Image (cartoon, rainbow, N blue to C red; front, side, top):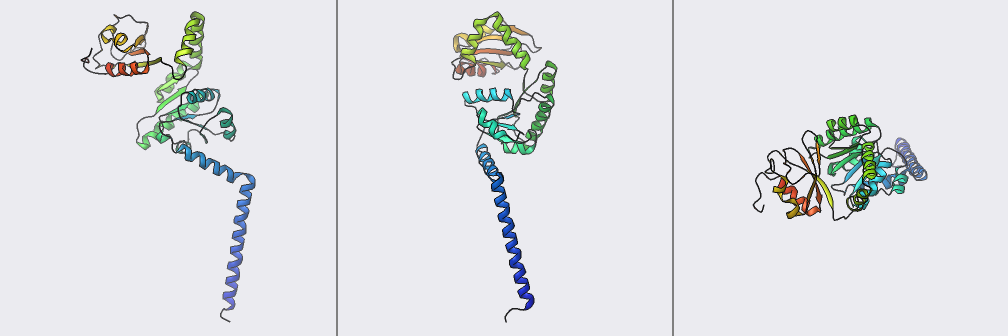
Length: 293
């Protein structure tokens, strides 16, 4: 007697609507569980949580044999990395090639950059065999870092020809590797000096090796400009040897003598232990001659 007919109708209608919504929601949950989409969402959330904790990692875009080999080397050297590719079976690919972190998104999208935590990365690597993919990725990354206002990322890419290599560098790539050129040089080294190839495999390409190789740029205001190599005392003080010099115009001098004069804006190819090379770099970039030399 406390409810009017209109009130009873409204209450019943509200109850039926609530029951319908509840039934519909349960149906969606059951469908998601049966189709595996809920499980996929939970897996992705767990993966993204792990990636969000990374710092100074590398983001490798596009899965292929180059990526698989690079991932193997990164694991051996304990370098954190995330692989990004749009393939739907990335979970299986990651399991097969032992990718610790992966994102299944289109490489050059902002979603992929966010999920791979590119904002906190050390560098981006694009290893597509399609030059257009590499161009798009490089341009997108450079625009993204400008939007963030962060220091430039180290961008490494690959190209099949020398022409494409120069194009990628002009577009913003810091380093571009040309596999055909590298293969030709390495095979040539094997043919001419087979023993030298064994030395490279033993000391330069293995992790935790006591010998390292690095190229050091000589700025125009360096005290070392117009001085002979012997004046730097790299070999007797730091146990570091200069095995090559790349001049500003690109001419390469192999195995320079102690009397070779260092020119501004050239690059010295150093071989030695990491501690010695680090010390040599600090000395070379100074504007005044160090007192202990």
